Image: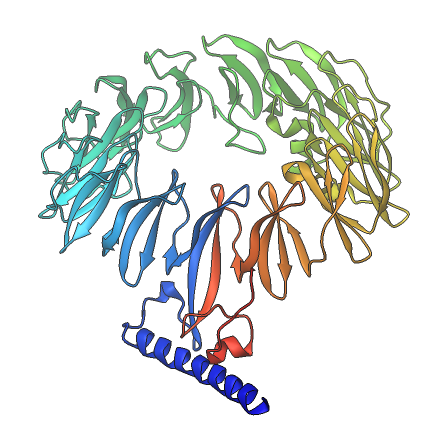
Length: 577
């Protein structure tokens, strides 16, 4: 009986060895993948797949490489052949090409024997393989190159221009249906039908915005419309697009040393102000875009406001003006206040100004409509008024920062809290988190806080959703938080309901509706409902980008998943995932 048992053991060992030898012979007949994307390692190789934001495996780890998804498509590689998959993992183009450009609006460029053609999103061949190079522009148009010349095709694969133009350089963008083209050292424009709307004559051709584009000839600048008509003549030394079709035009005086500026309606060419101002944009942030059809005027270092019709709505008496959407912060003699869109004073210019870039941002509410509070500053203390100019908080705070949901973070004696859009201190200033870090703990209307060395959560109405009892706690990104007590982990929803997880070595909150969990160096996906969405089998899960994450599994040279020393040696891995 013992002899039979020993024989069975020997037979089993011989079978395993035979299996390993046979598998080794089978794999050795395959040419090794030498492309760096396949990440060949000394003991094996990696394969890649994809999971979505719900943790569902849409592509198992079978590819040598997967690109990030772009517009719902990615290219994949096995050995040295490329193909394209969609967001469901379905193969759109088979893996048999050496070079591929990812889909633009509808077409993807594919190279065969040094020539490029196009396929659509259904995998249908749209053009022959005849181009030397291809490039997606925008708005469903593509550059094509043939014999060192360029042309344009549309989404149907039709050539809308002759292939006659020179390099496009950085002008490979259709903007508002118009493309700049280059020929013999000069620029012109074509429309979406390929028709030249201007002659090829400009030294510079800018992109179209708000129906106009900036052009120049012999260092003189002007504006044209979409019909190629010169709206603003090419007589200016400088043109600066502002917003809503308004432009700042500048022209040197007779001495050539000083430039005068005026406001012009770029759509009609009408002069809205005299050509007599120093600048038409100014302040600590010269790139600030006014939300309304209003421009700053600057003359003799004083600033005012003019509307789209050229009417002066704020006199040139201020040192600087910043936009707050439908209101403006105005500065004078190291003080500041607020005016409305008609120039009426809402808060008198009697608040103390601190000469720091960050303070400008706090005053102007980070230049958004979302902030209902106006910052007040007196004797190094801060408070808030509403947009009618009425005081809604005492001027008592030591610092304010990071506007959120129309409110602001505040601190007193290094204790921080939150004031809502009506000025109510809904989260009392009693927390030890530095004010500069408050926004890190605020997400989706919940503030995760630490008190008496324990963590809890409170909402923006001041209701304690979770009493402080956890040793650690993440913010509520993607509607749930991960908290710990000792070595136990919990998934917590926005109502405070906690669900204890299984024992994992690691649990990570990521940029998706799931958490990543790890055991013995392998990773899987845990849903917000505390369910394993995918088995714990991956060697790595990359960060989510565009709604998807790339997964990696490592294999030895015999094709077994690498889990331990024996797997490296080629012994089969019988662990069930």
